[in-house]
Amino acid sequence: MNISEKHICEHCSKEFCSKATLIRHKKTTKSCLEIQGKEDVAMECINCKKFFAMQYYKQHIEKCDIVFEKVKNEYKEQQKEIEKIRGQNKKISETNSKLKTELQESRLVFNSLTINLRCSFLTL
Ligand SMILES: [Zn+2]
Ligand SMILES: [Zn+2]
Image 1 (cartoon, helix red, strand yellow):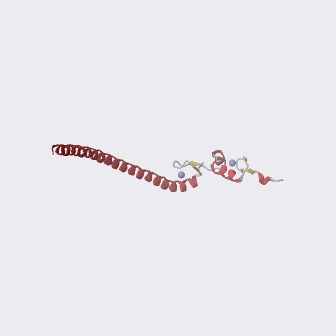
Image 2 (image 1 turned 120 degrees about the vertical axis):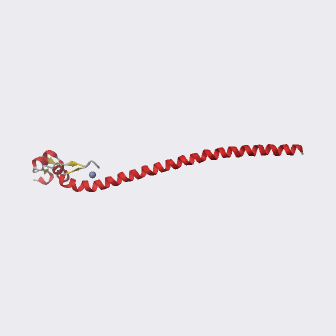
Image 3 (image 1 turned 180 degrees about the horizontal axis):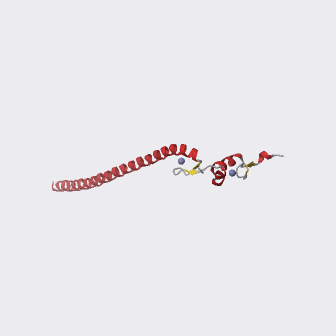
């Protein structure tokens, strides 16, 4: 007779193959929790989508909210950084096009100078 292999819920008589699943069942299964007389069935954390019995849920949500806020803030910071980089990029491309025009202008000046130089050589 080996009954240790079976894990039976003392509340709803369901059988489980492991102690861990039985414990999980007793904490999270709505119908079983109702049999246990616990009004507070498993609650889902809106942040991390995990299930908790009410007593753990309250504890968890406080911590999880902090984590969630942190993640949210980090995300906001990242967005700010991205905006900053975008702004910088815009400035850089503006400077680039300005430099391009300057380069073109100086090329034109250089060209006319060389032409002038050639002409003066020819006339010598
Ligand atoms: Zn049960
Ligand atoms: Zn959570």
